[in-house]
Amino acid sequence: MLLLSDILRPYWIAWSVMALAISGCAGTTTKSAPSTSEKPVLGLEQLLSLPVQQERVGFDQVVDFLHHQYAAHLRNGEISSLDTGGELVLADGYILLDASTRTPQRISGGPEVGAKVTSISLGVSKTPCFPLERFIQISGAQGPPPGVLGPSDYKRYRYRGADVDISASVRYPDFECVYFVNLDVIN
Image (cartoon, rainbow, N blue to C red; front, side):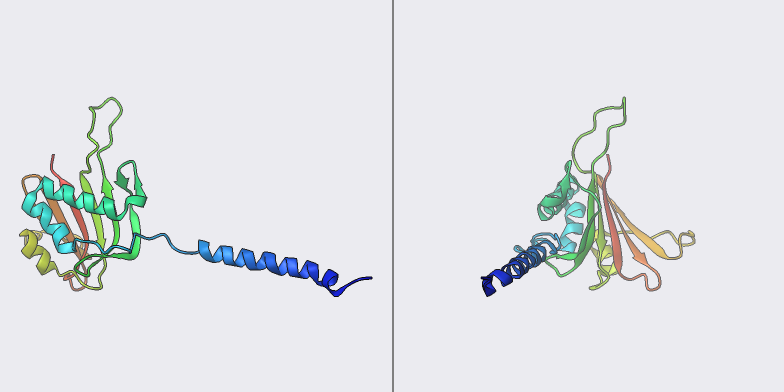
């Protein structure tokens, strides 16, 4: 004699398998992002002023901060073009859209190259705007000389210290908000 439970058993098993599959997929769709459990202790102003004030020592502090924030994304001691997806809100409220660090690579047959980071690139969100005027106040940066024709869609302002070179780019049409920063060690 065929019981109702015997008839419904295959359906019950199928529904159970589908429910497990759906619940398993829900956990895998989350985006990998920098840790938000602890708020960054530095702001964009500090990331820019440390190398200006302390040269290489300040630059290394910025590297340590970025490596701490993005520890899961380090590869061979570098953060390679990491898109933060606007997830890294700094202590002063400015947002990093992307960050990357670079170490010099040894050329075949060339001299040994240290493993220290020598270049940092930061993409800065336009909202909130990090004002060019504030970058100039922090760094004492200079703009392009008058009369020098450059690209019409952006301008680059530059600070050059004894050990560190920092440039910030602003975009057309207002040329007021910093959107990209490069920090480089000089020798």
